[in-house]
Length: 201
Image 1 (cartoon, rainbow, N blue to C red):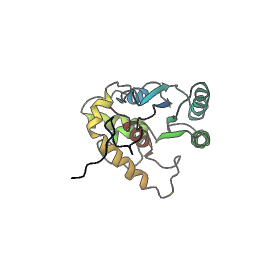
Image 2 (cartoon, one colour):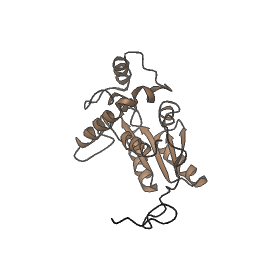
Image 3 (cartoon, helix red, strand yellow):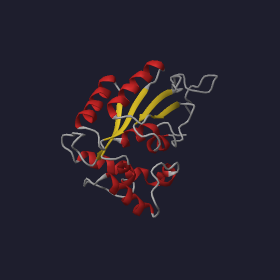
Image 4 (tube, rainbow, N blue to C red):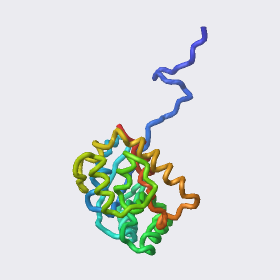
């Protein structure tokens, strides 16, 4: 009976060192609490990733500029900018996405509000609604008053996260030629969620 050769350390000689390099994330958010509270709740393994989440309370263009400055100070492997279409000007929103891409940063945008991502945990939504209506809708879906700066929303929605990702992907596919400033509703938050999930314990 043939046996696969194994060296004295107990692994096949073809196997190379597979230890993952620790990845460093910078996530800068337009909101000071809502988005940071959500992304800080990801139980990322500190052995493989370090995440620095900052809620800066800045408009999209300034947010990208701040990310650029922070990247100069620290050696981050991944930089994500998180912001909404909301009431920002067309120029500000569009330029922020372009400038982020030019810097090699990734963008998790929402048109119109970050709360679209939460709604997608419950249902597919492809009709644009005013920002205030997201809050009312979430209160109905959650069965309690939605607290905008909740520190527990990640855990409350966790079991529905795969549904949200699927709904977000399907929503994005509806736009044959994506145009973030016009595509309402739309979001790319699921891309950041999927990236962080790669490093969950």
